[in-house]
Image (cartoon, rainbow, N blue to C red; front, side):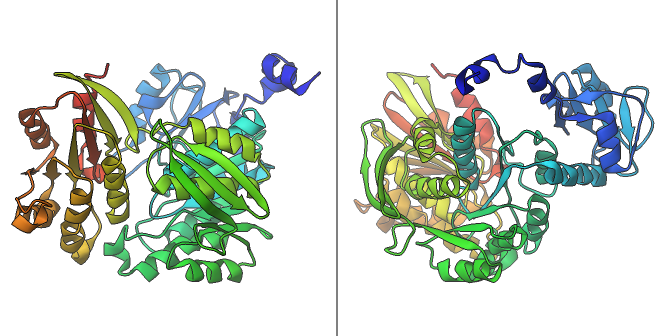
Length: 485
């Protein structure tokens, strides 16, 4: 049977049907040291009862403020096939002493049993988008045999959950790793044990906890500690911390691939031209090969991201052609660049949703992207950037320059930390024409919605919504996106 026909018929063959079983109760019990109430099989794993689908295993995690066992009725009501619990229940289950430890044990066995090429992704900016693009490219070339961590499941809970969800037939696994403090990625990479470790960039995210850019680079470089023997490190050639990252990778004995504009980059940008759809036409040099492709995602930062994606796919033995197609077709993720056309008086406004995360580097990048977006008026709703510590006032005040460069007509500033930027914008010199910039300073998302409603959106407007997730600007996005059409 041809490969194409096999893909079309899958999963009608008996052997393929078997691969849809993620874990049996006996396997879960053996991996976790628990006791199964009986035989059952699961096809997925969830820790939020609201996300449970028919056939899933519900993991009843316990935290400081919440006990997942309270949501067992909801999980089984949604179709859970079984649960991982620390107390006996009437429904199918595996009984363990600690559900968090059990999930990590399940993740360990999932990693041990796979033959997949494993890719770990971290970085101050862009890791979720890069992770998604690598996955999309590998899923295309492997015809569905790629796995990845969904959403931003990149911490001490999300990583083991993502690992435990990996089907044994996977050819590739792509996992995102995040951190707030030194030592956190070290623990995550020990679980993931990547063959390929990717660092997208180094920027002042979480500098409050780490104290310096050098410390941030060291914390990100912890990802190399978990590299399998003979593994590959992918690093940003244009970063001022490139040498620091290179030394950390060399200490692990890794093969190193650098990407960027630098002359010594292995995946090197030759040319980037804007295309009619808002993306970029990229020409890159990969060794002795010249490669041309389109990046659908707008913004200068996605040019570097695309080189990073190609380097990872190449290192994994994937198809660069499939990677090029994936980059040409990718749309923005919710909270990370998704775009919506919103009905307003006089036509439609463009709503750019970057509400999930923000740091000084990503703020500048997205404001530059807004400045390149054709629009009658440009509006920026900017939420506070968190975890900047003593650096917060200066980093917020410095946003006045990219706001002016982007020719923003109206800015809505949200959060106490934005006071420094409000003061800066209130100065006469903060505006190119010498007049104070037009802005509103709000305490929360509710006030920001009211300020934007009072300002009044009109046809031809482009609205950027960007801020740290805790500011809650997703509420503002949902409010206006409800008018999508």
